[in-house]
Image (cartoon, rainbow, N blue to C red; front, side, top):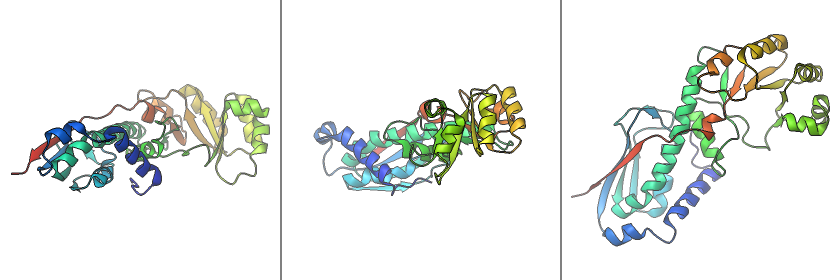
Length: 278
């Protein structure tokens, strides 16, 4: 689920280590003897859906002198007090890497936990929850992996891998039909955002197969979906949150996109406990 061989993942870890350590961890270097050895445990301090634990070997590896043993994996639901991973080796390495490790796992697990809550809220309907491009710059691949770990379905990775004709594209192109005509030869997915019933009819008449209905109330969305009657897949979006997503799912869409999964996730509580070897 977490592809630690992905170039963007490795680059993100390298940058995080460089950002935090810089020319060196002066506090640890001055206070901790070089020969001192220790072990450490990553402990959950609440129940949550885990994501990013597989990054630990990438974080500790470049520093040398540490062994990482994972007790869990991304996608697991963990309990308060549960051990997520153990590290053992030079105390300096364990201390220097602690904050980068916690930052990644706490942030990514927050995303996975929020994704799981959204996915659970639509259980029993045909709707699947989608993430969006509303991610932290430079961390999109990691955050989308975390969303998937929580049960969300990844939407497009960026502007390069699918066509999504939104309202401003429609305005610039001169209408729904004109925009769809211009992307006719694109070989990948083509989705078009619809704002009015007139645009809906125009899109269907032009052969659109994927529709994004934005900012509709649940009852209105249900009415439009009945009208579409399977002629195209339907994604709903626009301010949908945990308190409203079930009503939208029961309107009958194929997908519901929720930017909050990545842009509003709260980091979970994880602690790192260090113990010296005797």
